[in-house]
Length: 267
Ligand SMILES: Cc1cc2nc3c(=O)[nH]c(=O)nc-3n(C[C@H](O)[C@H](O)[C@H](O)COP(=O)(O)OP(=O)(O)OC[C@H]3O[C@@H](n4cnc5c(N)ncnc54)[C@H](O)[C@@H]3O)c2cc1C
Image 1: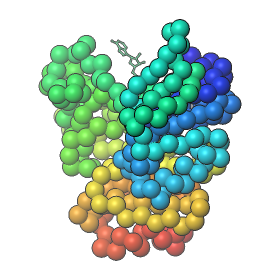
Image 2: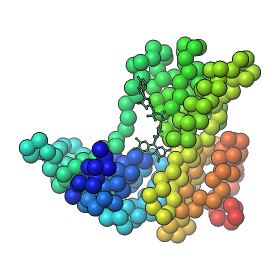
Image 3: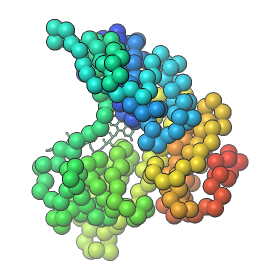
Image 4: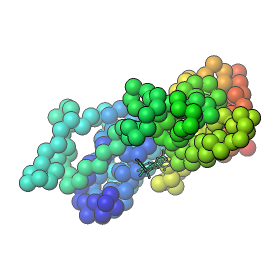
């Protein structure tokens, strides 16, 4: 249905400056719709990127014909004869459209299982992915677990992570002894591959960042907690991604954080 809507649309509004909103903005633009992409923050994916890094992504979107509109919160829809015709921002600006695509977060559909959950409905598990009912394990986007890598309770949403989590939950469920049961110590990755310039986010995007824009297509941002490296965002220059995942998993500490931003470190 999204494909059909994108193919038929002449002018679209996409709401949500996150990892999924960008997919929708690209889908509408690539199918020829004049696309207004409304981002509430000052740049795309402000959770993990500063304006300098996101600027590279904005340029790529604009090359595809997307109108990137930052600092803009959608607040109202206007329709005629049951069809949406405009999205109005908090500031009163109106964006004409025949289609609206929204990617502003998700709500867990977890009523099916009666185990301990967060206030927001996420299923809670331990590091072995076991819920408060020892016969029930859980994996995926709607699960909050204790990560021995990040040493905190966390929720991660990506294909590779959910896949690995499901596999670990399954193995732990059929484990015949507690020694066979293993903690889930995966380091997640999320990629956006729409542009010739690859975007890759690894690990935890909170903590203290250092970043460097090498040129119009290459940027790297690294996240630290104390001196430990916990996450990375790469644009264009993705060399060393597996090594970085190992560093995060091994809890490596670095005094000279800036040195890791240089390409020479990874060559
Ligand atoms: C538009 C979009 C683009 C994305 N792009 C990327 C990307 O580029 N890279 C990336 O890494 N991740 C991406 N993701 C995120 C990725 O899809 C999720 O992280 C991943 O699918 C989560 O896996 P999951 O198993 O938790 O949930 P899901 O993949 O949603 O699977 C849950 C399944 O459970 C089924 N189900 C629900 N309730 C019941 C029930 N009561 N009984 C039986 N079955 C039930 C559902 O039908 C569904 O099949 C994207 C997500 C979206 C929505």
